[in-house]
Image 1 (tube, helix red, strand yellow):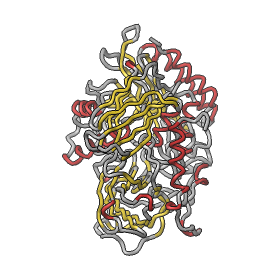
Image 2 (spheres, rainbow, N blue to C red):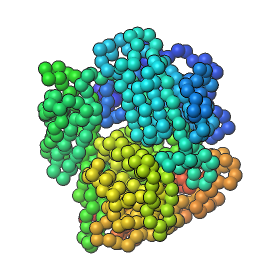
Image 3 (cartoon, one colour):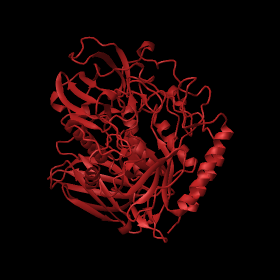
Image 4 (spheres, helix red, strand yellow):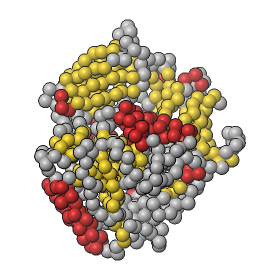
Length: 610
């Protein structure tokens, strides 16, 4: 396939393999099996959703196996009191991976903390998988999950944002249909767990709750010894990358090949449990303007030299750091040069799928639109996306500040840190660590944001140290908005509509973590017809455009004087909140696209380049 990289070909094969395999076939669908819930606005992609091919793409782009079985599609579901055991009968069919409250799930009703949501489906293990271990993967389930296969409990997990997996081999029958049952409980805003903006009673900046599976479920076969994960650490300043294989027995042979534009760049052999340092002379650097990705092939072998596992991956060569400009002001730097980072707050909600985009194309569309508007970054706000999202940010070149989803109580700007209950603190730290591990290799992510506006904020200096110990390659925004404790790599303020800048400091960069919030409800494209909300409201597209251009013009002297980044609220409208650059259904950019993009690009010119 001329012009396509090895990784592109591999991903295309992996995405298609399930759909082409007889082992992935499902029974013919009848009309009553599924239909979206009516009475809600929908995106244009909703019409492309088919129960027999929903989110068919391989869900883990940085560790791709060619053999897999997609379990998205129609499952049986039941909502029962939380104390009851598995139901004898089910209420109907739910379209996985859309959460129960969403229109595209076909259910469209809340579950609540007094109930459990039950799922059931069957599958058959492909004959070609005989003799290997079988792993059941969940990309995201909110919140407390228990999993049974053929009546045997095979796993349990708490956390709404990090992927998890269960080895189900020992629970499988020798042949025929196999049964999966999943039970999910979610206390929403009555619990202390990380939950982001989910509430039982949506209003203002608070949105509809999400329960259950909300991202892809899949099976794959692995050998007794297999690759558990990869850790890829680029060092752009020294033109080298360090790679380690985790999860396999230490000492087993590993072969790594790096490809550039489909051609072999370098290949090395080393041992599992060690680090391989690969020199990449004249390395091509990753940036928003030139998001070049190297392809990676990793092969694990047995002690006798036979192939035991093979995965495809990729990486980008980039460094993120702090450094002083020629005037001595601390700046965010990408690949050793100052780069003003400018983009929207991104909630990641959809009117038809809530937490779940209707299609992979829809995920890509948001990123392409932001790039077209002249932005080079986004702040992913108190939500974590499926890994396909970050793949598109990597591929298309959009920097990401990744928030840890918030939960528990609130403190004001002058209050001391919370004293969180032991279980609440432990859940926050456990899930944050799992999120960092899952997203570690994505070059687009350049900042971890620990707390937002005092929400759930506790032990701030210790949490910053903990995050830095888990990932020393990225910057840390300890507290976006207020309750600053003088730690982390940036001093972050919020100002609506703004803009403004925090004072300069000798060891931290000054950033504007939120500003703007200019609202415009567009008839026919709102969550409800009346009583929509914005920080500042306008009635025409022209007035909104002029107000936005005025804000951006004020950013230019701030960028010249020391501001390193600005985050505009926000990518899209979300439910009754109409502060979006786009309508909630993504059918239109609400301001003049060309004028906004031209103004945005002038901000970068105002910031120093050295």
